[in-house]
Length: 420
Image (tube, rainbow, N blue to C red; front, side, top):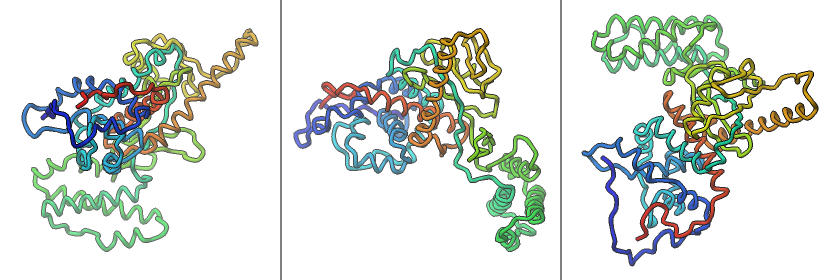
C-alpha cells in the first residue's frame, strides 16, 4: 500500500526545522532541490496496492537508492549513515532530525524489485535531464566494459562440490535416505594441495551418483519442484572445459566469461555493459547491460537508440575504439574508429582526427570512476535485472555528482516539501 502523505499545518514549537539548521549552500541540498521528486511519486504510484500496510514514502526510498550509489555504501551501512547524517535526512525529505532507522535494509531490496529495471532507468533519465542542453551533444563516445558479478573464480572442483552439497540439501529437505553421501571422502579429496585429473574425475563421479539417486528416489511432485535445480546440476556435471555457454556459478547461472584483452585480468565473469558519454560536456547519456557476449559493433545500434529515447536527439557521430572496427554506420549515426589516415588527407584533417580520438580516451577514466566510486566494479544485485539496475544507478550517481559541482545555492530550500 502506498504511504500516506503527512499533513500538518501546525508548526512544531519544540524542534526547529531541520533545513534551518543546515548549510543552505551544501551541494547535496542543492541537488535535492533540482531533482523532480514529484515525477517519481507519479511514476511509482501505480506499483502500490490500495490495501495492506502502508509502505515507506517513495521520496525516502528513491533518495536512499541515490545516496547508496553516491556514497558507495551497502544497504546496511547506508541505513546507519542516514541516522547520523542530517544532510542525508534532508535529501530524503525529512523536516526534523530523526533518531531511528528510516527502514529495514531489506526494504531497499523490496523497493528495487518493485520498481525494477524501468524504475532505475527513470532515475537515470532524471540525472541526464538535469544537464539540459549539455546532454544533447551531436558527438558521443561509446565504449564497453564488464560489470563483474559477486562470485568466486569458477573452477570445476568448486562447482561440482556445490552440486554435491545441493544434492545433500535436497535429500535432507525431502527426507530421502542416500545410499552414499560421501561426507568423509569429499573433504579428504579437497584437502589435497594439488587437484589432479584423478581427483576431479572422482568428484565428478560422486556428483553424478547423487544426481541419479535422487532422480530415482524422489517422488514426481518433488522432482517438479526441484526441476530447475536438477537441470542446473546436470549441466555442471556434463560440461567440459572446451564447451560454450558454460555455467560459472550456481546462484548466478547467467554469468558470462568475457575476455577484454587485459594483461592483468585475462577473463572477467559478469555481464557486458555499454556506456555512451558526450564528447565535450562529459555527461553519460546512455548505459545498457547485455545478457550475451556479443561483438561490440553489434550492440552499438541498441546503445544509440537508447540515447535517442532519453535525450530526444540521435547522435550524429559516435567515436569508438578499435573494438568496434568494421562498423561505419549505426542507424544513421556515423561511426569513427582509429585507423590509418587517407593519402589525400590534409595536415589539418589528420590533426583534427587525432585530437578527436585523444578526446575519446577520456571515457576510460570515467569507467574507472564508475567502477571504484559508484559500485560498478562488483555487482551484488541478483540476476539480469540486478545487472541493469546497478548499471543505471551507477551512471545516475556519476551524473548527479557532475550536476552537484555546478549547483546554485538553495534559495528558500523547501526540497520538494512544504515548510512546517
